[in-house]
Amino acid sequence: MGFQTEFNSVCKFKSEQELYELLEYGRGKMVKKGFRVFPTGEMVIAYTPENKAIAIVKIVASIAEINFQGEEVTQVEMELVRRLTEEESRIQTALAHEMFFGLKRS
Image 1 (cartoon, one colour):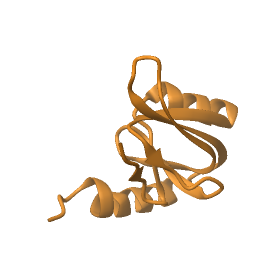
Image 2: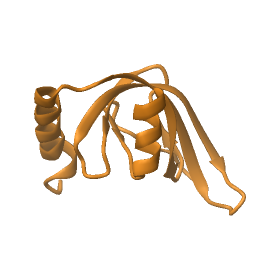
Image 3: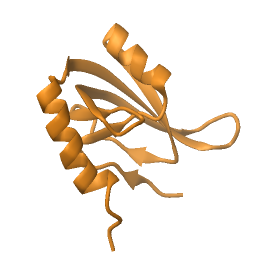
Image 4: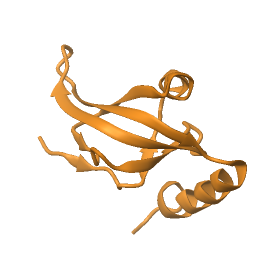
């Protein structure tokens, strides 16, 4: 049992529904498999399931637990700070692809 640390500028959604709730209501949460450490109180870039930068969010809570099915999960609650402009999204998406989502590191 160990914690995986998330890089402090990435918050990638796997579910369109979770992303929709954040953008529509200004608050939302996502559930990640495994125990993870998210930077509570920090502002980070949120990415769509397609790896596109979409918004700046503030992490307000990160709760790691074992759910009723016996799985290790982390729930991350966040507030929407603001959506990115088209230019900001394009630049952040390109950088993230190069740094996180693109090439495999050795």
